Structures are given as C-alpha cells and as structure tokens.
Image 1 (cartoon, rainbow, N blue to C red):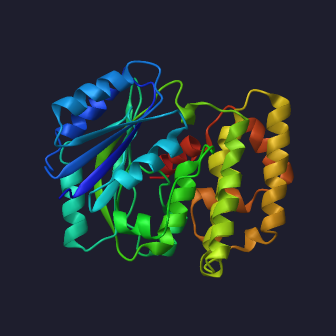
Image 2: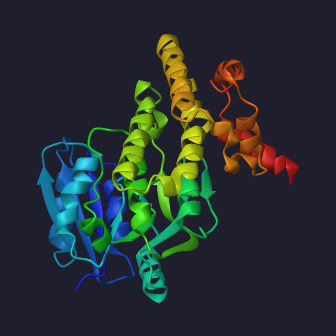
Length: 331
C-alpha cells in the first residue's frame, strides 16, 4: 500500500521535468506513488515522462489527457491516488529527497490531516527561503496560510469525502482549493524545513502581470459563496474580510500595478477598490488590522486618494519587498 501519492501535472516542461522526476523517484519514502498527468504537452515532456514510467513501473503511473490547464490535470490525477495522503508538485519544481518521508512521519506521529513545510524561491541568480510560523488553529491558518498546493501533504479521505477539486479556468486555483480545504481539517502540522524548490521562470504565471490578476477576486468570491452554502461564513467572517482586504491592498495590488496597459490597470484598480468597500464597508474596523506590523499600518492609513498614489509607487517598487526591507532595517 502506498503511503503518499504525488500528483504531477505536466505541460511543455522538457527542460525541467527530469530534475523534478529524479527528486521524486529518489525519495527516501519507499511507499510512494507518482502520478504523472501529461496535459497535452507539445514538446518532449510526455516522452520523458513515459521513459521514467517504464523505468519505475512500481512507482510511476503515467496518464495522458487533452490540454485543460493545471487545475484540470491535478483533478484528473486525484481519482487514481492510492496513497493515504496526497501531495502535489509542479513539473518544473523539485523536492528534497527526504521530504515526503519526514512529512508522512510527522503526519502519523501527530495524527494530522495536513502537514505543511517551508520552501525556497529559486531564481536564476539567487534563492530566498520562505519560512513561516506554525498555525495555532484553523482561523489563524485561514489568515496566514501560504496558498500554494505543492508544500502540503493532505489526507486523501478529506479531499474525496468533501469533493474538493481545483477550479478550472482560473489563475488562482490554489487559493480556492486551500481555503475550501481548511474547515475540514482537524489536526494540522508544520515542519520548519524548506523541502520544496519553487523554480522561477521568466514565462511562469507568477511573473506575468496582466488583466488576469483580477481573477483572484472571482476566486475569493467563490470561497465566500462556498462558506455561505456550508453555513460556516459567520465562523470565519473576520478572517475572510481581513484576507480580502489584504489581497486588494497588498498581494494582488502590487501585481496589478505592474500591468503595462494603463487603461486596463486604471479600470482594474478602481473596480477592486470599489468591490472591497462594497462587500466590506467596515473593513477598517477589522480587529486583525489592530495588530502592530508595517503591513497593517499601511492598510489602516490608506484611502482612495492614497490608493491611487501607491499604485504609481508600486508600479516601480514591490510592496512585499519594501516591507521586508523595512522589517530588516528595524531589526
């Protein structure tokens, strides 16, 4: 029986896929199932994946499908998972060889539904470790979780029982999946080790700034709708409000500021500001904004005039990097 099933969506990554697959087949965890989903690749990615499937028949399951995008490929692989836990990794990233053994052992030792680890932003000329602190409960997790799919180990039963899948056709699929997952977790664990190497490419989604960045708000609206349907919205209302405001004013704001088409940028910024203040007219009274940190200070002092001013500044300066430098300077 497999302990962990790793789902790997593949699309036109012939330059990177061998490094990813080598990191998986050499995992110290022996009871591992590697599910390769070729999402209609047009380069040699599929051929390479097939070769590995032939060499490691006891570990690798190779699947092919027509191109449907990242979410569709991940969803396609889920029903084939035989492991107790499911993990996801993108085919242009790679993972330390002891990662899944340590994460699985942590899950079993602490009877956890979910284990999260740190990761490394891997750029051509530098690396940056993304570290975080352990969540004390699900509400804190909602507010602070790193909304990526590939640094997590998730109990398969929870995914299947609650019909949790990635939304098709939207850019921020990990955000919706993660926030829908959170209410079903009973025990969460954290390993302060950067097992995952998140490789940054010039043409990767995160490096492309265009009008599709506004899709984050469609995703967040989907999450709000889901929480209302499941009658848990009131339980997470403050966390949802704070998270929505943070996306508008920080995470997605900086990306939209870098959109080159000035008319598109102006329209989107106006829309997201209006959406925030329509959906959450009292967001500035949110209790989490009272927590003392530079990001909250920035959010508390903003209005529509300064919002427009900051959009000019952050078209040049990244707020996340700016805040990080301020914190470093204060230390």
